[in-house]
Image (tube, rainbow, N blue to C red):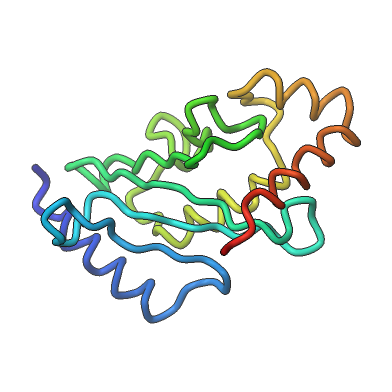
Length: 158
């Protein structure tokens, strides 16, 4: 195990609590015994204003590998989103989360979540992960936006 994983996550948590974007939340999950599990975070990303995503708060789980930050976390929407760059399992397909592409150990949790929020309304059509969402996005933007607005309504915070 990398000796920097937990100290880095502890520092990230401290920074997040000091300063995070409006409407977002990110916190370590609770383990079965009630203790804090730094290796798994529960996250909420708000839909951007003036987009079909507006009003929704979309939940993710971030799982950090033992060799974080050398390797990126896995980010998974729960429930899975209808989106060209989200696998049917809910896993996010984003270059900064891929160690073969753009991942760098200096990337913070805040940068990851802002990157996912940007991706939500601006899909990368060159890297589709979900064929139905990709096809609808490419061929029928009106139907796609209607589906996204419905998804936002289903994810309004309670």
